[in-house]
Image 1 (cartoon, rainbow, N blue to C red):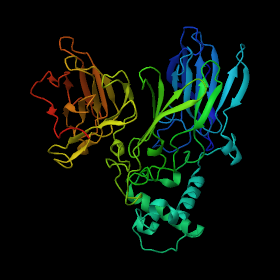
Image 2 (image 1 turned 90 degrees about the horizontal axis):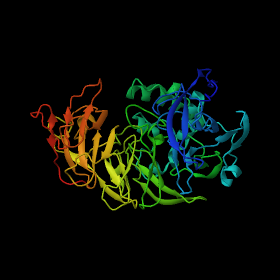
Image 3 (image 1 turned 30 degrees about the vertical axis):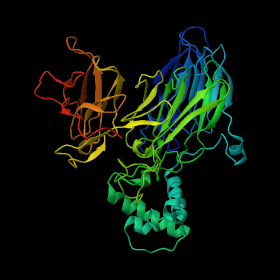
Image 4 (image 1 turned 120 degrees about the horizontal axis):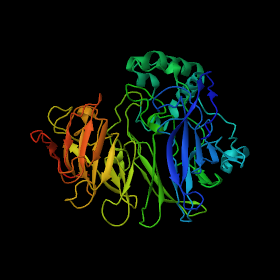
Length: 505
C-alpha cells in the first residue's frame, strides 16, 4: 500500500497515517474486486473532540496492490469516524462501480502511471455560482482559536436578526439567554459583541461544564461549501458534483450544539450516515443522512450514468428550543408534521432491508424506519418503567450505537431489528427486539444505564433462531444472552420485560 506522507498541523503537531475503513467493488468490469481504502491521520477526531486533523485520502487498489488513483479530500473535510462515509457500488448497472462521497473545495483526484509516479491531479468542479462568489480550491475553512472567537463575535452581532429571535422563540438579547442583567444596545457593536463573547467563553460556558474550554476550540470546519461527488471507480475521474443536501445551515446553534451542559459546536450538525438501498426493488440508490440527535435528515439519489436524480428527501425539521444556550432538545419532536418524530431515533449506522415484504427496501434508521417511497413507516416508542426518570411516560426508544436487522426469529414472519440504547434512565429499554415491519417492541430489558454495545449471533446451536446480547460500560453483559423469543439464557428466571405502551406512532 502507498501510505500518505506524514504531515504537520497549523499548530505544529505532526501526524502519520494508517489504513482505516475499506470497501470493495469491481471498478473496471473485469470480474475482480478492487479495494477502496480510506487513510485516516493519527490525529483523526470524533466530532465532539477539539483539535486539528490531517486530510483524508481514499485509495483504489488492484488485488495485486497497484494503486489506481487517490482521492485527496483536502483540508476542508475533517478527519474522523462520523465525517466521511464513502459508497462503492455499481449505481448505473454498467458493470463498473462508482465511488460517491461528501467533498469540499480542495478535493482532488491524483492518478498514477505504471511507474507509480503521479500522472495527473485534478480538482472537482465547483458550481459556477460558488466560483462567481469567490470560493476557490485554495480556501481553508479550518478555524483557529482566534478564528472561532471572531466567528462568535459575528454570530452575536447578528443576534437581533436571527429568525428564531425575530419570531420570539429565543430570548431577544444574549444577556437574557445567559441569565445576566441587560447591559447592551442591539444591534451590538463589535466591542459589545466581543464583551459578550468573553463572558460566554470565560464565565457562562465553564459554569455549565468544566469541560467547556472554548478558548481552545480549534480545528473545526463550520463554514464553506459542501458537495456530493460521484467519481468513476476505475480512474477517479469526477462524474458529477452537486451541493450536499442539506447544508449545515450554521455551526450547530440550531442543531442544539450549544444547548446542552456540554457545549459542542460542530457536533450534532456534522453527524453523517450513508448506505445503498434498492428502493424500487430494481435499481440501487444512494441514501445519505445528516444529523440524528436533533434535526434528522435523509436524501436518496439514483445515478443514471450522467447525473444524480433525487428519489426523495426526509427532514424532521428543527427541534424547537426556548433558549439555544440552555435547553434539552433531545427526545423532542421536530417541526415537520410527518417526520418530526425521527429526532433522537438515529444511530451511528443505517440499514437497508425489505421489512414489509413488498420487494422494495426500506431504510431502518435506528429506532425508526422510512418506507421505500420516503414516507415514515414508523417511529418506535415505549413506556418508561419503575425506577426510570419518569415512570409511565411514553418516550422514544431513542439513540443507540449498535443495530442489527435480519430474520432473527425463524418462527415469526418477516424480519426483526435488535438495538441497544444509550438513554440510561430516560430510555424505556437498554436493549430491545422489535418487529421490523411495524416497529412493535417484541421484548426488551430496561438497564437504566448507557447500553453502548450489542450483538447477535447463533451461538447456541440447540436453540432455535439467533441469540442477542448487550453490554454496558466496562464490558458488563448485565442484560444477559436472549433467545430469539426473548428468554434469558441460562437463567430463565431473569426474563425480559415484555413490551408495553401500545403501538408505535
